[in-house]
Structures are given as C-alpha cells and as structure tokens.
Picture 1 (cartoon, rainbow, N blue to C red):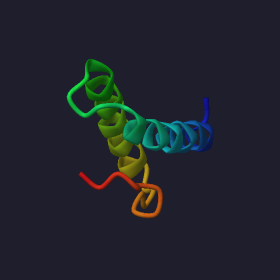
Picture 2: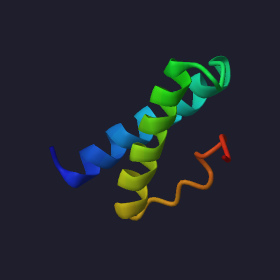
Picture 3: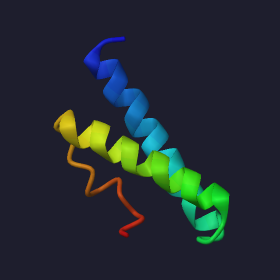
Length: 60
C-alpha cells in the first residue's frame, strides 16, 4: 500500500469512526474501543501531514 492509499483509507475510516461515536454511550465498552481507534487514526493522519481539524467533529 502506498502512502497516499494509506492516507485515503485512514481518512475514510476516521470519518466513519467520527460518525459512530455520537451513537454510542460514552461509558460503554464499544465507545471506548471506537475512541481508541479514533486516537490511532488521528496519530496516523497527523503524522502523515494531514490537517484533521475539518474532519474532527468529535472535539474531546
């Protein structure tokens, strides 16, 4: 997978995760798992030079 492909896949997944988070109870295990993936994707995208401020609708 090229870097561009990885960034594309990560951005798509990040957007998807951001849509799922509000649907889950913040105290639930599923929310904690989704939040963990959210953080991982933020690290991947940020370290790849992507400005995630427009994509990041869950500002925690």
